[in-house]
Image (cartoon, rainbow, N blue to C red; front, side, top):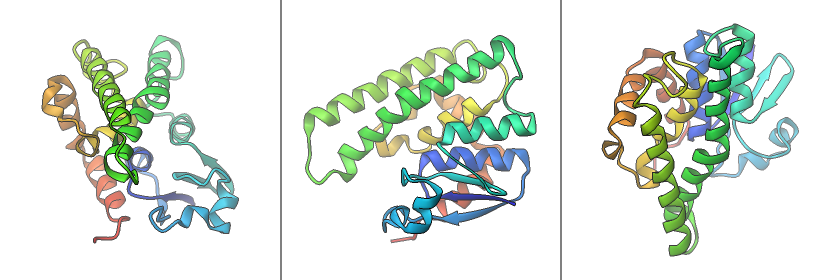
Length: 206
């Protein structure tokens, strides 16, 4: 039985989307990072880095959302080309996401909404970088239906997670018409709707 330890954040959504797209049965376990549950002894044994998501595949425990995406896609033979240029494009987008877009969005949101004090320079820097990187993605989508070509892949699932929280970062997707078209298309997929509802349900209503 697959077990996903997660909370209502973009990096967790991308894994839930893939699990739903693959049609796999899995147990979804909440790790409330607002309450510090990621620091519990139980969770630290799963991931000493203390971050979600974590996947437990019958005792094989894996962290880092991009690694989980690649692992599941390769295991099931879907949403990741097996070789060649098409595979390289997907990996390129995953690296772009993990090293660029995700950190920029995360920091932009943190300094605007969660930091104990406002740091204007940090806000300006990370919001500007988030906008720049979204603009790059918009350019990519001018040439293809999806971020790594003409097929829907785990690269799209990775980027979708943060675009789902664009407003938290201070971005308006309407400023990026191709990204908006792509986002709207993916958001209407039944597995994405189900995954989003499951992940959102992990955050207690306040």
